[in-house]
Image (cartoon, rainbow, N blue to C red):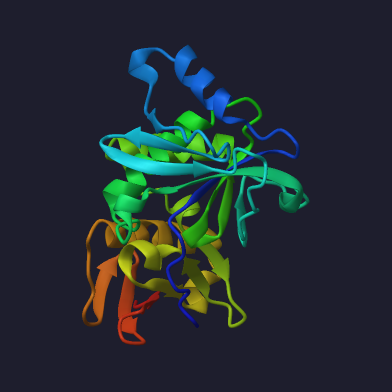
Length: 248
């Protein structure tokens, strides 16, 4: 298994083709929102560039681009709440990424957490359909994003099925993608456990939350799974992979 290199910490907000919101639509959204509901403000609007705005939230700035309608579609491998036949290449996209002063800090949890809150606000723009997350190559429906993110922002579980992804590889393992962006490693759940999709999913979500929360595994350990099973967790490939199996 090859661990994907960290990708740009960007969110992409999806709109119907030809219906990209303009800069004025973002300003109108802020004007209509009550003060308590404004999760961001516009801190800079270039006079000679109608493609981007600088947004400010919790003291951090983010670049919102694609407002001219020229935003490129993100690379997507896993969908949550988005139909398989939805043509992503013929959608319109806004891209939200950390500002220049946050260069190198895009994988820091506080930076991504604040950015996710800004995306929740942008989903109130007319026509917003979904949200893609670059590091995991995921796309989520607007409803899925609204369901999994607010609880995390209030201190709840990390939204593993959205800001990370789970898929089955050719050897029958369930593998994660995007976890390495936050924790520096990916999960590989072995076939015996992977044959129980519901259990494998619960195990992965629990482990992803723990790893993003700071849990580290330097040597093989046994941990209790969500249904009381005993799991073997072993670091491999110089700590870039955590192999998970049923221990007993």
